[in-house]
Length: 193
Image (cartoon, rainbow, N blue to C red; front, side, top):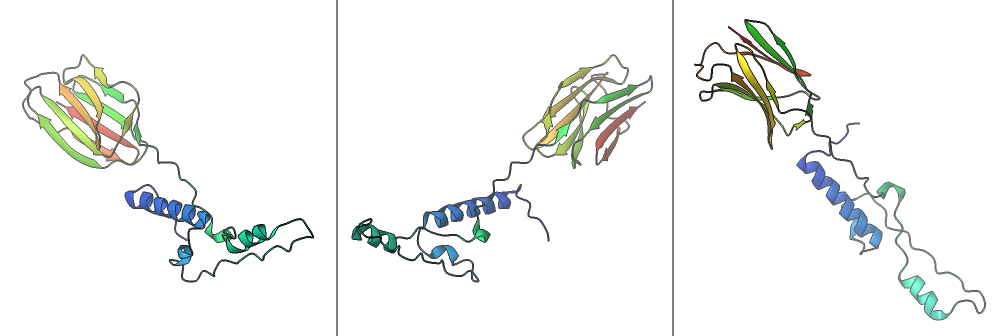
């Protein structure tokens, strides 16, 4: 038996539909509630209560007979609300540096999808974007006294996460492409001279 993923736009629509139909069915709004369930039996009617001598009047008996409370089978219980999925997170980076290389490793809570990489000329920087609405806790900016990289910024946007690596030489010309290695649990970026 496969499970249904309620996190997408169609899942939210399905939850809304189930909730509205369950509320309307519970309110007794007509017999339409089983039209979409072709194999469902009709609702059972309650029998009119038999009055004991002098305990109930005729009006109470007529009201109970004409408007019985709705009875839903157990298989038609209202839908349970599913909590929204947590946004994926990126952890604080780990940096490794020597005189000829600079490396940064970012841990990811879910596998990421590379959206794009780009070189920015002024100020000289290299960018990596990951698709998705990411959550970032911790510092946004890291500064270094390194011959290759002077600053790293992590910026969550509406539908992607951007990593910006600012070169130490602000007039750096596009040179060798940095190595970007995206794995299910991490993103590694390495700059070499």
